[in-house]
Image (spheres, rainbow, N blue to C red):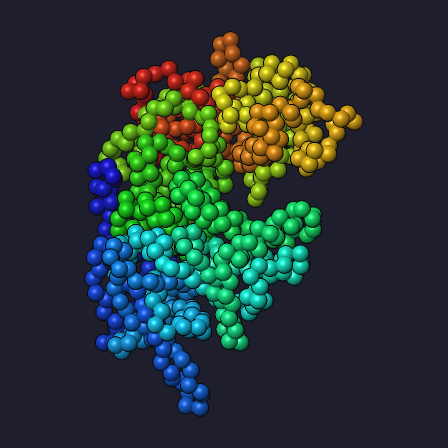
Length: 637
């Protein structure tokens, strides 16, 4: 890690955790039991961690009640590098209330403060066969919650702890409505009742937590464990069986065209993320952190806003670059994380996580170049890591960290290439899932609306034909993912632009039939060879792949607007796609380390980041005419 980043960390002192939701605070300040019987934790080495051995005792709360087993624990220490490691299970759960208002007795008679939910989880584990003597890792018991230094040190080991466990127990709480799922290894997905049970399982809140995501993905074997708080029943489902049922249900609903109970479940996004990333980890190793971040922000939640960073960076083994994280306020952690990502990668890829808003809804003094990791990005990035893209706006010039006296500023190098002069009043609305190709169909109408308004207001009309916006988007859709060859009016085999609109209408209106191969365009049996449909199909290997790219760009449009740059002598105005927060007079820059141009707004001698953009003619390094060391240095605030 660079010296200046460490210096920034050292300037931060201990501070009470900030809260994102005061009704659901993070477990940062457990209630301390000041009595003499409070359990005293012993210090841990760098690779050491604690385990609890589960015991029971029988007692009754009232004299007329029957005796029942209650849990007691024995704290033991282990090491990740031990020559004979202990076999243990790691428990994944949600804290519920962070107030540790209950006490758990140890075998030596001392007490550990715990949350009420943890006692219910231990009761559920005790109901399993051969539960006595089991070794478990449970964060509330195995980490001294009063010691923020130990918490940070142990958090850095979490991924290894879960990966080394023989099994991860995902405790989902009261599941009285799901007991039938324990009766079958794989559900009969042809039954609508079974699919409703499965959808209810996927919607359990535990699967929406960022830490639980990490713990399931890291585990070698995973079991879902639930209990009936009042009825005494038990739910046990092997993860592999849950995944088989989930995949079978998705395939069945697609093939049979029945009611999409599982496919439309609110929990589908997070379960898909967990399933896909668990399979990827087994086959290929960890995914790119930037890709994980952009996907996880959409579907995962945290009680403590710092955990949006800590849970994901820990999973990627990146946490060691951010020591003593639980001693930092949230805003400081976000800023340090952003600096570290930029410093390690020598890129500005982290800008893809910027929301495009002028102010963060939770942090009034958030620098514009620091993402608010607690919020979904709202803007789909123009590129995704580890996917092929021709975008290379900075011509491979890397970003180099330059120290500044003001730790809230980021100094970058680059050049201004254009300025926003005109923009469409209409903005592409933010949609929950703007992936429908039909979303692109309205682009030409937006452009015609702008031309009409410009003419009536007496504004200069860009020297571009009415199809310029459509051309720009087609260029981005294709060249951005296959090669650096952009569409021009001559590249569709001379086909008139009016026919492109007809082709796009067919794509939007009949995409399902085209995928099935049953659509016959305009009453003829084959597509014209110069049609967009076979052309894009050939470019991507199949029409299905082409439709996926078009859908991707339909999502790219969401939350953005089409704008025009300055008029250059002898050339038409450049067309761009920018965050809808962009305004006239904002400038377009190519910054070293950036794959795509960035919209900046001048504030005195500094600039504020509005967001990344698509700027036609600048995406592949065409505008980079300066030497690397000749870039202009500017400060982002």
